[in-house]
Image (tube, rainbow, N blue to C red; front, side):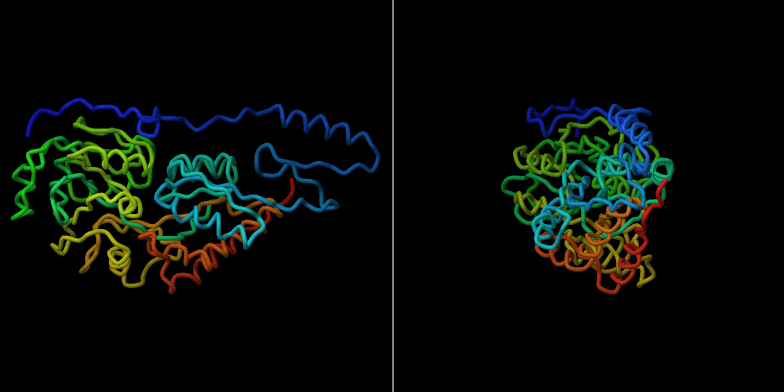
Length: 395
């Protein structure tokens, strides 16, 4: 134990602290839009010329009904780094099932949602459902947003303890104490208590945390808020928290966290199970509400989902944090694709085609990634969500 130390910095670009970024503000008249307006006025002077109309998306134009809309050849998406391995598989697999082609960038859930709202991408991928504030912002830009769940994942507590065999056992209160800076060494009595017979080293704990807005951070802080009134009052559940002072490293993206933990003896961080396995990190067993120490797995996420007894909405907008039930892993949650329901006709057709593929053929690609595919009984409800993507009327 000891006083909180200052936060070391990592030199690599992926692990530098990120300054909070406001969503970009779009000018009322952009050069592209001005040019199009001038062209439209010129065309209007020509008898019989087609009329150019604005659609709901910024900086785009839609011709009148007499002109056939151009086919959509590319869908752009960004967001969750937790789901990035799955999306990368989809990019390859859907290349043989399209058009359109699919392009994905793992930017973190927060940025992925912002890009979708602003029309920079066609859909976002997020481990956190949109907040009321985000839904209001979206309503002012493109209207109602759908949430389509495509997988369920677990967030693991990962560590680097050379010479320590087997999973370290951690309780919720112990994790809170570590992330509050109250437990600062691995041989603290609070950790020895749940690890009898394990020679925990007298090694300082270095907390590794995300510096970018992320769904993993939201799920992690939601769990800490659930098990600790102090954490709930001081920090709360959020994708971009004000972290308490601890000895820590700040990383960008799931890969940044994995690399920082892998090269730092004594490190403890949180990230999605798929990334932990890829880097050979130690994965802790976390105590659930049944008193069991459970390591993260698709089976643990399924047990958390099963705790609802089938009474879950098709869009899976439910909490899987600290759910009751044998084998339930306490830090889990769905990943959603989010998009505007109303789309220009050609885009609507392309988006429906891809989303249908994602909830059917695409589910098989979750295998081997430590992700739980959406359970089969829920999939008919996913088809119903996809069917709500409709053509926006011309303006």
